[in-house]
Image (cartoon, rainbow, N blue to C red; front, side, top):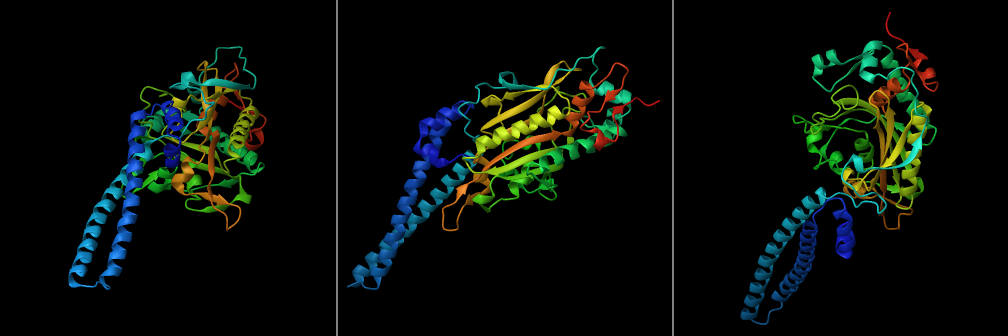
Length: 424
């Protein structure tokens, strides 16, 4: 949620920033008018309460019955008007809260303009492009030939956009999770396995509700939701808390199974592991001060690159266009890896600086001393390892002409294999 005071104090700057994200200026003007009306009602309400209090005191000191009746009438009139003012103020505040909940974060001034993934700007390259002596196969063909990926039985069990991993793919998945967690733990990220069935406030606090409701699985009987990323419970861990400034940055590494309806993805990535309803992921999450957040964003992105380079993958970092940002993100970098079987770069990880947008909803603040004022924290999230997509990238990148797939050296101790071979 954006700071309403910023809209009030520097309307033109906020309007210019949000217009880049497709927000109608007229909508912001209506919000500013409602805010002005709300503040006028607050002043009027305070004045009416003061008048009613003073009249109430004067009633007992009235010099005549007529004066007493006049003061009583004045008190009733003030009370009647106060009820009207409070009702109008409550309605305006509810309308403001609802409107603010749908507004996205202000974009970073340096984030590129644009509306979709084609407008992203490459800012960095990593790894070496794979060279194959035979035509490259995609991960579905490779996985089925190796006997480690079964999409038909997964569809029989759960419908389309589901996958069944078996045999060495299970060790590969668990190896990737441990590889990422070991890397992050050594760099100060506390490993966490959080709940994945959460209350509404956790999704609202992170900005996934109300705007992305169509992507989220809801369990009506319990009025809870399945998360699409452990960013949600990691952020909500410190809901309505005041953190010690000396403890920041506070860093976590969350591992979870995640669920997404993919309601708006008809016809996109219907084949394989790239866009499924259930997937495992290791997520980085940081709570910082405002002064630290830009550096932390670069740090998390660098760590993503190092993790992917450690797996022998080639790709690029792209700066996402403002029109393609999630609601809570001020700026986002994606790490896109080259998939030889698809002959294109595909997103494997993303990293977002959400500044104080989530913290304002979650009421998560920090201060250095008890006598000091509090300040909102900044929150950042980044994928350390999206397991299914990474398996797809490993299969396509490290495939060999004889049908085998090499396991990167970094994973061999975790997987217990140095090569994946087709069943005899």
